[in-house]
Structure formats: structure tokens, C-alpha cells
Image (cartoon, rainbow, N blue to C red; front, side):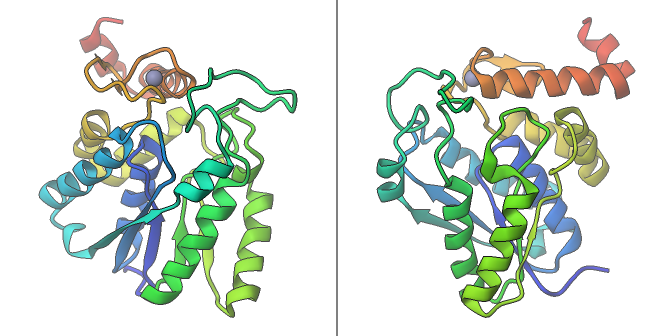
Length: 244
Ligand code: ZN
């Protein structure tokens, strides 16, 4: 049985938010997606969104009728305020707060406020995001404690009863691949490898076993480690096939 409440997925076109989209399509009768254009250096991320959605429609007939509108919200003003390595030409390094310079202060809080306003207008009750406490990035706005407080603030401030759902919160990057396989089988794993985009450098012309990317930025390293962990634990046949 699917939930008629409806969900809005914060969808960047990356691995994590693609798995979140599949998770929501598995549960909700109506699912819409929202992306944020805050002046990312690489529009490749926003292009991946369209490709992932298109392929879900083609390959997953049970999910296709549930997949509703896509929304892209222009937030370049926020990007300018929060200028960091993601949005400006600065090297990725650790700051004196122990956070990577890729951290955009309060990004998920701002995204959720915009997403909630949109969900209110669209009549959707669940906000689904790929925030994760176990990816070692230490982003304080990815913690469940932060999101619980945000959920309460949104519901008080908008007189709503939203749920902020984070299906990846306490699982490892390796387990995210396992979750994808559980939700959509090999077809979903293949879709994530081919169409989702995670690399901070926007590289799309180098294909690794775990997908496309430069292979050296923190996002690629995290994705590669997760893939290797999953292959080592759960995919002995594939490991043999790839010869590693
Ligand atoms: Zn990369």
C-alpha cells in the first residue's frame, strides 16, 4: 500500500537523492522533485536530474505514474551569500571549524524552508532528503537533531504537519547501494551508475566502476569507497567480474 499524503524529494541528481527518490516512489502515490540552482559551478548536476527522472519513467513502469512535476528554484542570491568552494573558485580544504570548505553554511535549512513552502502549495506532506550522519563530512545541517528542530520550526511557522524524512540518515555509503538494489534491483543500480552525478569537479567523461567523476575530489572518494565497500561485502560475483 502506498501513502496518499504525497512527497516532495529534495533532488540534486546525485547518488543519494536518486536513492531517496526511489524510496519515495516506493511509498507514496504522488512524488514531486525539487532542485536548487544556487550558482553551482557545474550545471552538470542539474542536467543529471533530468536524465535520472527520464530513465525512471522509462525503466520503472510501477513508479512512472507516481512521478509528478519537477521544480527548480533559483537561489543564486543564497549562493552568493554562502560563497564557498562549491560556488566559487576556491580550493577544497578544511576550515578552522573542522569543516570542509565545501560546506555552505545553513544550506539544508534554507533548502528545507523553500521546499516546505513549495510542498504547502502543492499539497505534499513529506519532505524527503538524502542527509546522512555517517558520511564523515560533519555537516551540522545534515544531523537528525538539526532536522528534527527544523521540522518543528516549519510546522509551527507554516501551521503544517510536514514530516522531514531522511531514509539515509544512519546508513553507510555501502548500505546506500544495498538499499538501491533492494528498492529497484540491478536496473536501479545501473541507473545510478550511469545517470546520477556526484563529482564536485563536474567530470562526466571518465567512467569508474562506481560511475562518472574525477576520482579524486572528496565526493568521488566517498562514492568510490561506498561502492568498494558494497562490492566487498555483498557482491562477490561482481567483484570477480571486475577483476578487483
Ligand atoms: Zn570528483
